[in-house]
Every structure is written in structure tokens, then in C-alpha cells.
Length: 265
Image 1 (tube, rainbow, N blue to C red):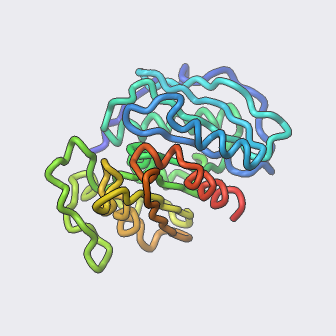
Image 2: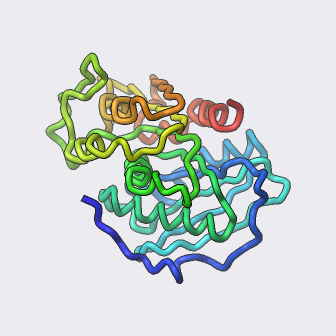
């Protein structure tokens, strides 16, 4: 299943910078979804900067899978943010995204002495994060995931790829009635996901139990996938005109909940 992409790690990173203090809190990565750009996660990043006196750098991953960091964290910043931008924003190969994320985290570890991290992911970025943890989560030499906020996650089916999946719901056990091939794979390897992560799963019910692109059953299927492995798991459904797939990452209500969960709980 996994397609190992050798991305030339020796030359993949920008020049080393001063190591971060060991007492700093986990850095927080923001992952965009399919067709995302450097602007996709900006509303959430700006909200965090406003709410927490955060400072942000950008991790740009090119088509070869190499990463370059731009910007710097202010020494006085209370939180350190990383906006991750993938030049190839069209792939729907989960393992490819996971490999790119691995390169980003290696760069953060080597250049900034990052040891722990949080993630805020939108849409396809969620699948990349989950498959990253299934592949690398047991490697204790890598930075460790502490908190994870999923927004409009497509864990059990990708719009445009599984168009026949519209009739889907959660059974009483929490297991989806319809299982996408990648979700079946993740279920078989779920024990590789590290224990002790705290998760907040956010999704929108714009109409008919979907956000306009992703069924709520697909987003909610994360709970069944990671059952018994998490330190905590919470969900929240948003309703109304801003509860669309793209609208969720632009909503101040979503941003407020994300920031409170990550930085004040």
C-alpha cells in the first residue's frame, strides 16, 4: 500500500537556524486540502496569531518533495505556527502526502529542534496526517503528535473518487455502513496510530448530513478508526450558511473553537 518516495533528504531542508528552547510548547502545523494554496489556511492562522500572540513560518514542499522554510519565529511569541504548503496540491495519494509531511517534520526537528507538534488539518490534509501517523507514528525518534484538530475530514471516502458512496451512515457501533478501500486499509493498521493523542473532530451539516462535499459519516468515521487509542476524543457539528466544506476553514466560530482547544485546554 505504501509507496515510498525518496525525496533526497540530504538536500531537502533550508539552512539550519537557531534551535528552539526545550521549554517551548508544541509547534502547530496547518495542513490544507486538495487544490489548497498558501492562502487556504490563512484565516485559521491569523486567528491564532490574534488570539495567542503566535508567530508563523511557512514550510513549502515542492513537486520533488523537498521542503524549504520561509520566515522566522519571534522570540517573544507564545505559540509557534507552521503553515504547510504543497506545490502539488492535486494528488489524492494519501501515502504521498504522508511522505511529504514526514519531510516537513524532519526539517522542523533538524533545523528548529522541534520535539512535539499539534496539527490543524482541513479536508484531504486529514487523510495525509492519519496516514503519516499510521506509517511513522511508532518512531519515537521523530517529533510526537500531541493534539489534532480535524476539519471537514474525508476519512471514509473522497468526493470525486467514490461518487457511489453517498448512501452512508454510522451503525450503532460507530462503524460506517460503507467502507472506502483506504479506510479499510487504515482499519487493518489502526494499532500503528500512537496512543495518547487528543483529538477534536469538527464538521459541518450544511444540508442532508453533509458539508456540500463530504458526508458527515465520512468525517465522523475517525472516531471508530481511532477508538481506544486516544487520550480524548471530542466532536462538534456546525450548522448554517458557514457550515460548508470551504466555509468551515474561514469561519471565526471554527477558529475560536480550534484556538481554545489547542492553546487554552
